[in-house]
Image (spheres, rainbow, N blue to C red):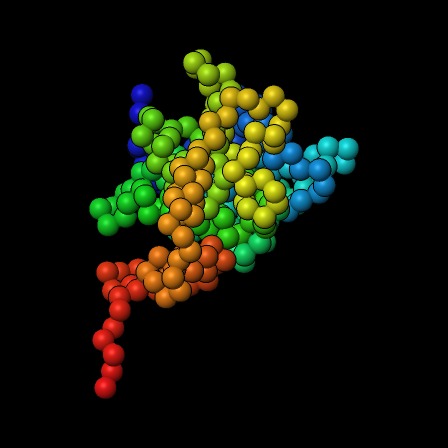
Length: 281
């Protein structure tokens, strides 16, 4: 049986019929509820927060965010993004409490820097691994998504993305894109080796004392593969080479990366970036 993301793009696959079927299925609602509660557990929010729901669909996860009791840190306020007009129409008919935005997360996350305390995504980001046209690559869609997500989260914020990778290559491509965007990242697998296995990509944004250390997000979170070791190794190698010279290519690239993470527009990097020019007469 083909995976949904291999059949059609999400905005076409989730038409009016499929959106209603998805929303009214008791089995899907129960699974969605379990995964959303697990994502909230991993976020470990102690106070009411502003949460971004990426691939929010018809608002099933948003309902749970709105209903978190005060003794568990809620209720939370949420904003949902989804590419399917039919899914969002069902959400409007259900009168969900969150604000809704029709947008493709593969084109970026169009919010001001530091807008959100946290973010969740349930069963959505694996769709970014498929490109419908030859001029669009999964790598570029993942890069735009994670860079936009990093920018719109406050420093010390967290994100949890539950996803279904097709294979290990997709799993590595997704986690690698998150790390390149600047996140401290790890993958938690519930019920490994069973048909009920669920993967959660747990992300942290630097500035809250959690960068690169996500093992304490939840008690008993021992099965996490922390994947920022490569970034620490790169930083260590840079330290051994000594400080970057101001105006060098490495210095320029680092500054451009910092500006991009703040949500600012920077010029594209080319072979001429940082090239020394001859002195003028």
